[in-house]
Amino acid sequence: MSNFILNNEFSESDLGILNFIEKIKNKELILFETSGTTGKPKKINHSVESLLKNIKINNKLNNVVWGLTYDYKKIAGSQVILQSYLNNGNLVNLFNKPKEEITDLISKFNITHISATPTFYRLLFGDTVFKSIKQVTLGGEVVTEQLFKKLEILFPNANITNIYALTEFGTLLSSRHHYFELSEKKLEFIKIKNNHIYVKTDKWIDTGDIVDMIDLTKFIIVGRDTNMINVGGVKVNPLKIEGALNNLDFVKNSFVYPKKNSIVGNVVIADVVTNKIVSQIYVKEMLKNDLTTYEIPLKINFVEHIKINSTGKIIRK
Amino acid sequence: MKKNLIEIINEVLSDSGKKITTVTGETDLRKDLGMDSMNLAHLTVIIEDEYGIDIFDDGIISKISDIEKKINE
Image (cartoon, rainbow over the protein chains, first blue to last red):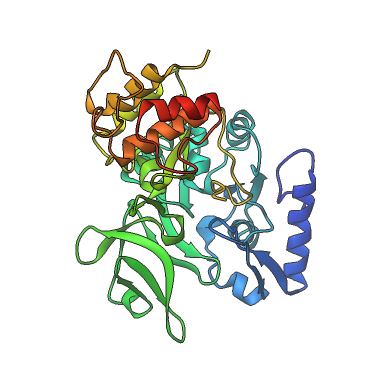
């Protein structure tokens, strides 16, 4: 057990992870909260059996070094911990740590496997390249083609896996691209209707996740219905706008949200983290190729960082 | 220093490539300056930022003098 977590000094979070492992050993029921990214967090009880359902035991995973970027109290974190623990791997706790410390820990412990949100990876973009990483997993937020290409540069020796997972169902789809593909087998429990993803339990449930179809079987997840901003009667997707902003070379991260407006109901505002000084007018000009008038933020605030929640996603409340 | 009305209007109109140098109290935002609803929404966002007031919160503003009255209230 003492070798399981490689950090030198145990923090409260590290002790929490060890406590979680004890609960698994004792087969206790474990309570999780969904992230509440789009609304109130939901509390869900998981049995040990259900937590272990998606864990792969594989000799190839022995002795790998996982970087834990998620809160151990959330489903995504629990899956990384179990994957590591049950395969006799090692774990380095990167959760909630600043960029410099994460960069140092990846190098110091030769982290080989990492699972995180796009927001987490954007934090790492810069001059450093992480050659020790062999497996990169991402999910929980919209993944664009540009983000995928940047990850290939950031992690030149890694397999990159994009996953679509829901707390209630675990991992539903995985892909080696920014898009997902529906096979005959998957169609038995996932379908696309009116550009929404539906999942089958005893009946079909609308996940609220919105897709753009590339062809008959391939699609990109572009957002979530509850996130849409109504600007003068036009539904605008903030995640598409963030995607366009994040594609600009000088933008490190962005957060797009509505502001009440007496003329058009809501207007689009953006908080943007940049790596050089630019003007609002310049940013708006750069967005004109990709966005419509309704989508271009009327106001751009230049900020030092974007707030994220304990599951590594941008807080949208 | 707060932006004056001409600067604010030009910032809003820059999206459509227009630029003005003078306005009078009688200048109409829609008829004379060609502003559409998104331009007016933009105008409210900038004025709220600069002066801390929503000029459209209790009715329709059509002329420059209406804005000046609101700002000076």
